[in-house]
Image 1 (spheres, rainbow, N blue to C red):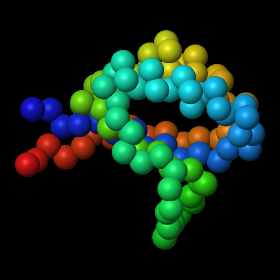
Image 2: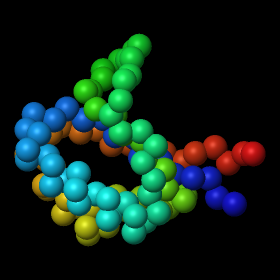
Image 3: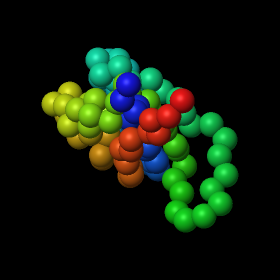
Length: 99
């Protein structure tokens, strides 16, 4: 069984209305790749380093699928919807493969 893959996203949104179409389109894209939202917004405390106002963690069946989703034509087009309205950091990591 392969380790899961995760997107870790941190964003500062400066135009909520312009950002909404990006959020709306993500559901279908993530579903296509088996993505599941684990964290979206919510309370947080940043203890070290730079933080942004929104945090998102999305779980995928494996690291390769997480990469495929990010690199997909659908998501790459959706990035262009997001970019004028926010600043984002996205990291894709492989989870721990242990019981």
